[in-house]
Length: 84
Image 1: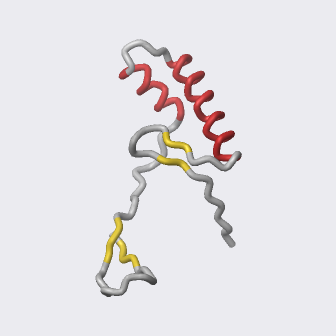
Image 2: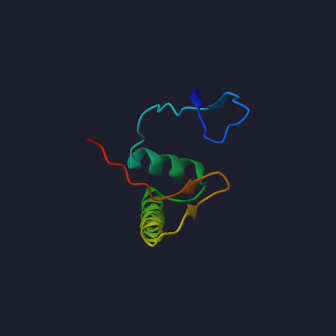
């Protein structure tokens, strides 16, 4: 958890947000294997084709300025960061 300081926080109450802690990186092969195992019918090759199509579509929509929502809880936005 980390403190959030807002300019418009007139009550001076402390607000906290959860910090994401990564457990590591999942390879696409592991992801496709999981889809194959849990989908009840998709092969690894089919998972590859579907994920490639979805990835290409998300990239294109983000590039065109859209926010992409794939499920009720995940929203993707384009964010540019400058790192020195």
